[in-house]
Image 1 (cartoon, rainbow, N blue to C red):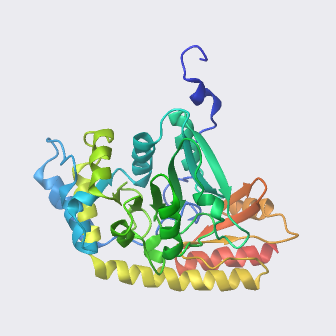
Image 2: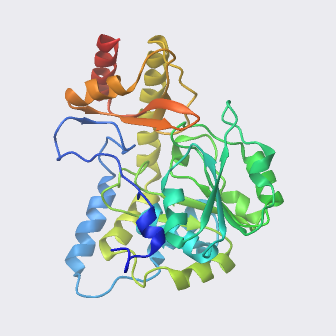
Amino acid sequence: MEKYVRPEIMAMNGYVPGEQPKAGQGIKLNTNENPYRASEKVYEAIRQAAAFGLSRYPDPTGTAVRVAVSKKFNIDPDSVLCGNGSDDLLTILTRTFVGNSELLRLPYPTYILYRSLAEIQGADSELVPFNTDWTLPDTFFAAAPKLRLVFLPNPNSPSGTTIPKSRILEIAEHLPCPLVVDEAYADFAEEHCIDLIEKCDKIIVCRTLSKSYALAGLRFGYLVAAPKWVAQMMKVKDSYNCDSLAIAAAAAAISDDNWLAENRTKILATRTRLTDEMRRLGFDVPTSHANFTWNTRKNVALKPVYDYLKNLGILVRYMDYPCWGEGLRISVGTEEQINQCLDFIEKFL
């Protein structure tokens, strides 16, 4: 294989998604999916789109979604780019801005796909560790040779913590390259950064419908950026990267503010209880602004806890970061699912 496959691909381990059991088996709290059914307006939009027929190619730019996003945030539709999930958008961003042997920067620990995207591109990645309180050091916005793009998830995974908007604007203004604020979980937080693109055109905000809109199985995301950046990324994306059903469903979801508000209220209430109960059980849990919590505990090995829960049909995410430590990331499920998870963790302890 070495004769034919690019050396960068041979050398990399590749991103490993969270375990996906067969539908209906066990309790799944490992990939930050929304445990509730999406808006009924989404399913009606899919039915109407399917009835219209699927013999023609979809709208290559996802106009219906771009208009829905522009209305929601009062922005120019030309500032919006649609993607087949936010991972598609992260790939487009990396391919647009980062060349072979150039540099991509990201915080640590965080979403490990970022590093894989750099490896696929033949680029280098620089990991800047968070401070122990999950703030960022000034080195995060320091200039560096060949630095072409910086990823900043906000809220971060696995911690669920956030960087204030004022600090993000400061970082972007100091950086010599674009800053991608990955807001996969922003609908569960108290603020977002979409309005910052008007204050600093180096800021690009990436969103997904997988989490807050309960559409992980649909695969749809969008980013918001200065139109000049969107125009360049249009050259890089696949010609028809979003299908007709997904475009119709995404537009309907984004337009249903009432469903989003109701769902958010339920998720946040369960998140608060999960946080309080895990702290009561002796875990260190930073305040989360996402739909999951990050749980660590001194003097208790957590891999056995993960294995114990898995054997009982409860999947959480075990992560062990070199030079940082291990933890359990637990997605916010339904009240019943979280009750069972907490009961078994307490029994194990």
